[in-house]
Image 1 (cartoon, rainbow over the protein chains, first blue to last red):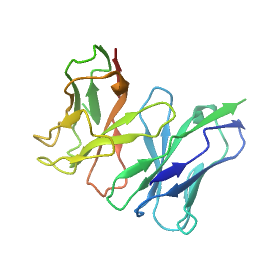
Image 2 (image 1 turned 45 degrees about the vertical axis):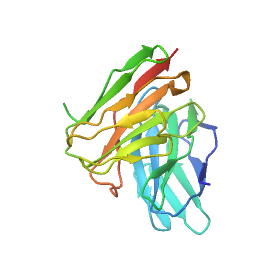
Image 3 (image 1 turned 90 degrees about the vertical axis):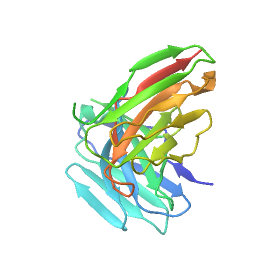
Length: 109
Length: 113
């Protein structure tokens, strides 16, 4: 079967750094995505990795290791507005997205 | 309008009733998708359309049907609603089926009693 695992909830402090991990087992791999979803809102695209390594975009970075079936999203200089759920998704061999349940990130002052 | 719109925003529906959720995008995207999102579960694909005139089944298609008569519209129909279809439904679109980014509508919160 296909499976995406990520922690259910994490807590971090404003101004700090947090790493949200995602492991996956899918039929084929055509890229890994991270989306942000604020409560009651739609998901919005954050990042895309298809090759191994780190992709940096401002305060957010995403890392991929295809051999380990592993990714992480790194958020630096946390702000209160970063409180949201972070969704990991993998595009499988049929080019469909398989989604994790999401990690709810709580930022404390 | 700009982006994707969904209607209604929320709906309470009696079991057994027929319901159509509407989705319209003005980005001229070829691919469109319907997902449901339930607490503790990831987004699950119901149906998709890679281009106008074609549709395909996702992970959880039973009890739902779609049509794609034109590029902009992708309605989702529940022929006879059941309580297990209580969920938040998101429509999304992307420039093409293998495009990297999907854009999501604001969602429809559906309750079936």
